[in-house]
Length: 78
Image 1 (cartoon, rainbow, N blue to C red):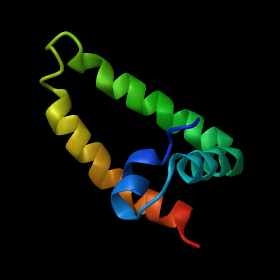
Image 2 (image 1 turned 180 degrees about the horizontal axis):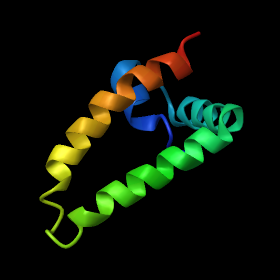
Image 3 (image 1 turned 135 degrees about the vertical axis):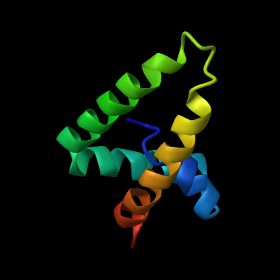
Image 4 (image 1 turned 120 degrees about the vertical axis):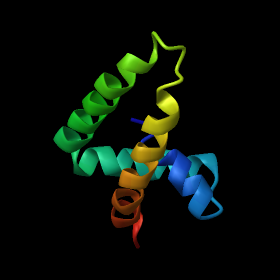
């Protein structure tokens, strides 16, 4: 819950840890089911990367970041 938007937020704008935790908490409180389903999808999709010593995660992380950026922007716009 505390790290929902931390990585893109730190890349996008200067923010301290408290602001990042507050933004993540607001995002989860606003959309709890969506965040839970998204976390489950990420966990299931990253699972096959473990047996290959996470080599498969190189492509997965790129796709995840590309798909997640618009969602981050929509969630954190002021």
